[in-house]
Length: 232
Image 1 (cartoon, rainbow, N blue to C red):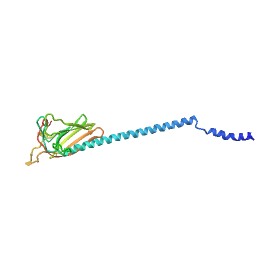
Image 2 (image 1 turned 90 degrees about the horizontal axis):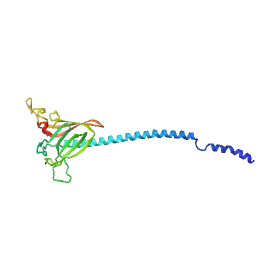
Image 3 (image 1 turned 90 degrees about the vertical axis):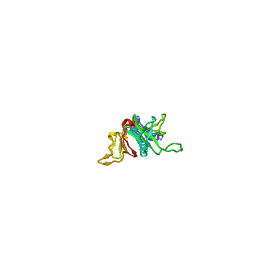
Image 4 (image 1 turned 120 degrees about the vertical axis):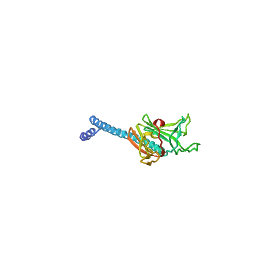
């Protein structure tokens, strides 16, 4: 009887031994599949992270660009007809400019500490070494030791071109225009309005964005015939 019972239980015991774990081949196949999935997942994650980094960089660049252009537009819109005296004692026009810089007097300089100073400010925007800079002076009529406060507004600016539109809708490469660019005050017997600056056009070439064009309205600034050397 005991021998028969032992023979009866042999088969289930053998079956149980066959179901223990995986074979070496099965483990190798599973590891290979896992490795392929891991590589694909890492590649996809790497692409997502690269795209996110590029998007963040573009967003940061765009925010800086918008901030700089907003500041420039605000300053230009507050330009006033107030000539200044430079540190050499020479008088400079209220608004001067060439294709790569503008300099002018603006209103609206905030004075939260109620200091004894004017609310007018002399500012200058210029392009140098692929950067857009802004300078301002603490006084309008400068002494020999007057120094400008200067900072970078934008980087990766590969080019800057500025043009000046007068109230007769004529474009100029500099302001004030030189004597040859100014139309006579009398044309066909009709007296024209005095020459004045109406707007400026800025064309910035940004490394990551290409060409950007802005047309900025200027408060009425009287013009005058002046040579290029006079405005430098």
